[in-house]
Image (cartoon, rainbow, N blue to C red; front, side, top):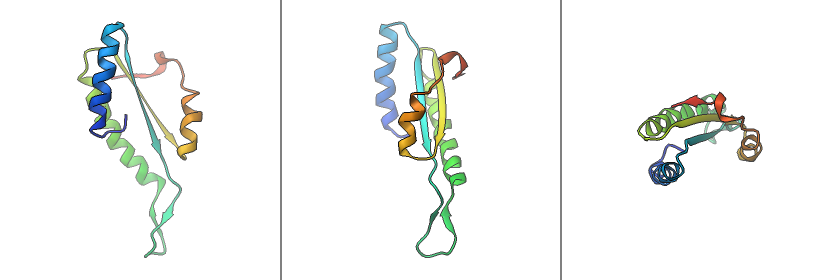
Length: 103
C-alpha cells in the first residue's frame, strides 16, 4: 500500500482472493526515510527524515481507512526504513500476524 489511487485496484484484487479462500488481508507500508537532503538554494537541509515520517503518517491514515472498508479481517503494519535497499531486508523480518494491529 502506498496511499495512492493504485491502492483501490490492489485492495479489490486481494479482497476477492481473501473472500475466495476465507482468509485475511495484510497491508504493509514501507515508509522510506531519506537522509537529510540539502536544497540547492539554501544552506540548511530542505527535507529531514522527520518530514518523511509526517508524510508517512498521512499515508498510513489513508491506508487504514481503506482497509477498514473491506469485509475481510485486515492487518496493517508500517515500517520506517532508511532507504530503498532496506525494504527487502525488513520485509523478510516481518513477524507473525498476531502482533500486527487490527484495522
